[in-house]
Amino acid sequence: MHRLTFDGLQIRPDQVWGGIRLVPLVRDEPITSLRLHPSGFPVDDSFDAYEPYCCYTPHGLTAEWTDDGTAVPALGTALRMPARTVRKSRRPATKLERRTRVHFVPHQTALEAFLPLTFRVPSIAWQEWSTRAFRRGLPRQDDPRYSGFDVEGLADALRIFELHPGQCGVLVYVADALASAIVTPHPDDYRALHPTLIEDGFGELIWRYAHLYDASPDFRPHLDASTIDTIADLRTAMDAALQEWADFHQHVMAAGLLDAEYVFTADYQMDRYTLRRFRPHFIPGRETHVGEAITDDEGRLAYLRTFRLSETQSRRGRLLRTLSDHDWNLEATAAAMGLVLPALIARIDAAGYGTLLRQDVIDHFRAKKRTP
Image (cartoon, rainbow, N blue to C red; front, side, top):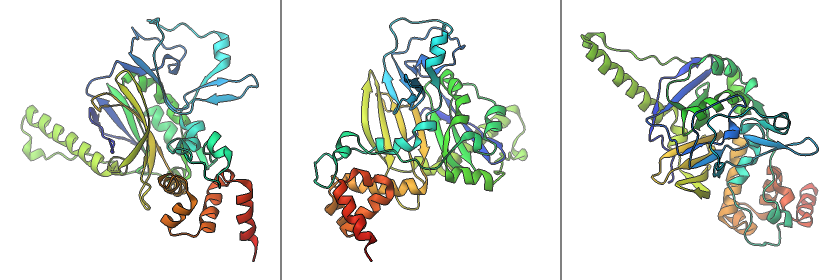
């Protein structure tokens, strides 16, 4: 598996509000053996027999409060077995549960933490790297991010647009730049997550697009009336228009996501489902998406969550990829990048990873950089 596909999903006509374009994704058949963990549903929600083989908790969705009042996000989507007891309807949460658990969408606290999750830490104890690099892994970067409330028009679009029957996902475009994609196994899962999309975090690029471009073109199908004489002709023409729209969207609008090749890492398996994180090859000049996907044993996409990286994050990803490809050996990495060693260390420091180097090493090169 090197590319993402929307097999088993149908791309429905989009809905446009200002610069926001939402493209619904509808399943041919819902997946019932993998479902959103019950904690992800609203407290007052109720549902029929809920008996999946395993559940998933999206990246950062559920946070528990610590004793000092700090919210702790769940980093990385988790696969888990459901509770032994199957409840036909959820009981109202107690006051204690309401105080100790909060729900928020994955991007809100974890966007800056996701990229390091797709790279392994140094596997060889090179003398230049500190013990922190081995014990704690890569640090999170506090890149500028904006809530969905700051993205012009997104709140209105999510509130006004209708959900399609059987809708299990959506592609979110801002000024026709693909900002994020979400796919869920079941329509009920998507309905539970849909209101939380407004709390998503977006990079500066998407925020700027929302303010610079206040309208996106409305792609309306044009049917040739001269070829339509009966209801059957009209149905055939509409089916052709729907297929043309789906092909256009998959091969043009979402090409940056679907045509790219990815590196899939950190496999976790439960029952017939496999959770993978993925990252691109960070080719300069191309849009970059990272995310997580859950597939079944036949390779069918059950769950997808993507994050659009900024150019700064992409440059950081290229640096991490080259370091990882050369087992974090500084000399080998510098040679591969065509740099001298001090220039590579300066680049690592500028990317925010200088704290991973031993203090005497980074102090030495910082001092040399300040020396005229």
